Image 1 (cartoon, rainbow, N blue to C red):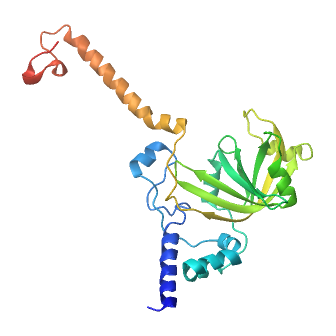
Image 2 (image 1 turned 135 degrees about the vertical axis):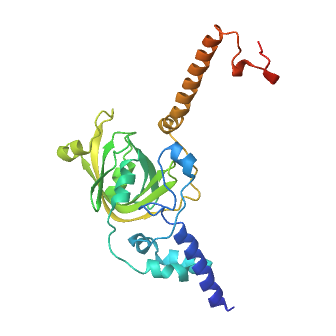
Image 3 (image 1 turned 90 degrees about the horizontal axis):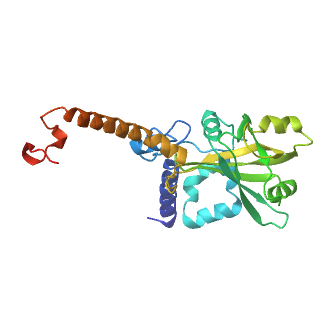
Length: 274
């Protein structure tokens, strides 16, 4: 086989493996996906199947990235996906539902010195809002008051979000332009994005105009569950244990007025034990 043929074959294999590992979201999972531990225990981790990729690749595949793909033999297979550019991606039902259940994400920005910066943005589930088909918003709470992301976004509004759900083994990458609006200057928006009964001061309203997004493969996401998810999963077990203990206690009470030992009190061969 020629070098070109081998490169194309490697590229096709890489594409097949990559596409088969693209999102298990958007209702395309081959197994039911549950955000709770009980669903994961029943169905196991999600299994992905292929689906067309988005504007994200056209945005992410720069000249140097394409050169690396050429070097490692994946360019030929990926080209037909990355070379199509359908414009800004539209947030669909799957993205809306996924984001509405998350309690945090990583926010990456770039400083005026060229150094990247990543920080965690957290809050109660649902604090990250989908405002429309191309816009996300959240209440930006007061933190350590270093304002690195705020300053970086003022220099270059292009940022990236990584939203990771360990329980589902799903992650969503989002690229967009971020605008921080002081809560004193846009009190109406800040109030609309505020989270009820959450003890934190809203300093800014954050508005992200989504340019592109892409779902990632769950292959290397370690399943982790919150205390609430674990409690919900084991609650039926606790209920069953309580019912069995009550049944056992009733059997013991009944045995005190009977000359015949209960089956559970009998030893080997039916001999009662003490």
